[in-house]
Amino acid sequence: MLSLSGRVGLIFGVANQRSIAWAAAEKTAEYGASVAVTYQGDRLARTVDALAKESNLPLALPCDVTRDEDIDGVFESVSERFGRIDFIVHSVAFAPKEALTGRFTETSRTQFQETMDISAYSLVKIAQRGAPLMSSGGAIVAMSYIGAERVIPNYNVMGPAKAALEANIRYLAHELGPAKIRVNAVSAGPVRTLAAAGIPGFRTMLSKTAEVTPLRRNITTDEVAQSIAFLVSDMSSGITGEIIHVDAGFHIQGASLSS
Ligand code: NAD
Image (cartoon, rainbow, N blue to C red; front, side):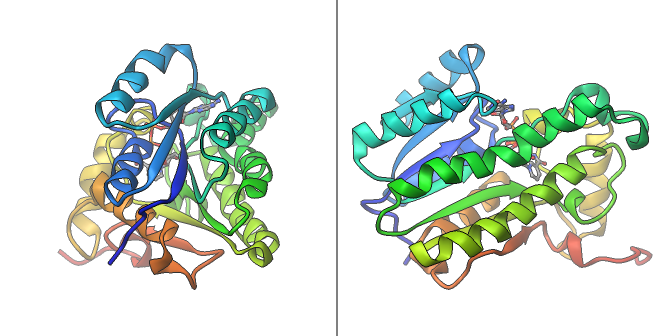
């Protein structure tokens, strides 16, 4: 049976109750883990503090992943409280709104750099600071999307950022494996969240995706959270460097001509 009893987890990227990070926090806590969560900044403090209190999570900490001092502060707080970390979930992404409309060809250098920094590089920094606290091994999971592998209209600069994130998974898995730290990603199908709402045409994407997936439906946030819990648990002890698609099978489809 899947159990995270006695484990300590740190989950980055809660904005609200709909966040994948929040679903992962609730799910891993349900399986017995002590879970600390992070949120981007003051704007989200009240919402996330209230959620954490309601669910008896021990820590909710501010962290803007573009600031090394914030990342350091989070690891210091978790280390002071628990002395170690068993798993980390990275559920953070951002692209400027203007970069998610119009032509990918028009992406500016600053838009590209900001998107890469927040959505891809931050995983490296977090692993760099987190690995020393995983002294008896551990698991790191990040969130990706099929836009890393294929062209999805309007996903634009997030596509290359997710491709970089997925490459990070493999390089980190290679280097951290000898320390018994596994590194994987969940490539999720579309789910309604704040970040998703920023992608023009997201509603249409949701309904069209549901029509063509082998399971003929969209996935739920709970299904993503279950898979994250699996990847941070001993049930997945032989899996590292993997990108697991939790997308109702969408990624296997070529042309979808059938009714
Ligand atoms: P969300 O908006 O709830 O979460 C995104 C989080 O990123 C927010 O908490 C936001 O505050 C945080 N963030 C943005 N910039 C940040 C910064 N500078 N520092 C710290 N945090 C920052 O949306 P979500 O859908 O739960 O997204 C979580 C992850 O899942 C993202 O990596 C996203 O790309 C991925 N994902 C989402 C979907 C989907 O359809 N919703 C599908 C596949 C993958």
